[in-house]
Image (cartoon, rainbow, N blue to C red; front, side, top):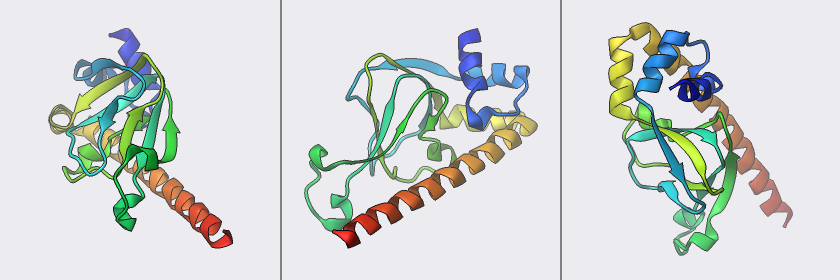
Amino acid sequence: MSSIISALSVTDIFDTLTRTQLELVAAISQPVTYQTGEVIIQEHGRTDSMFIIVQGLVEILVNPGFVTKSSDDDDEMLCLAELRAGQVVGEIALVDQGIRTATARIGKDESQLLRISREKMLNLCDTYPELGYKIMKNLAADLAFKMRNTDLTVRQYKTMLVEA
């Protein structure tokens, strides 16, 4: 349990949580190990979990063919980001149950992640409102950062296309 708490304590969305609050989150966290190429979130699919990267690599991929009506072949996937230890993927599942905006694929063998289900997290936040407020505040900041970063990436690709 202490290794889970250590992993959570260096994750931005759990910043400012007390030791006791981290223990509550650790209690609903499920450690999972994945291998290279495994998909944990499928673009345009649905998921009810978020993942904290403890060790390893997760690639965030999008299929440009979705907007250009080309094939859905994995070879055409565009890598937007590579996430590492301490980062979170799938956190939008805590906010809504809509379709996922990208694919999250494991990029390194023996990647260790913590899986937290939406239901368990929301129940924890409802039971402990101060904890819930801290997590949701940090989650909003994390999502805002990722939106800004994605916006910058899109602008860079657009500039590359115009120059080509």
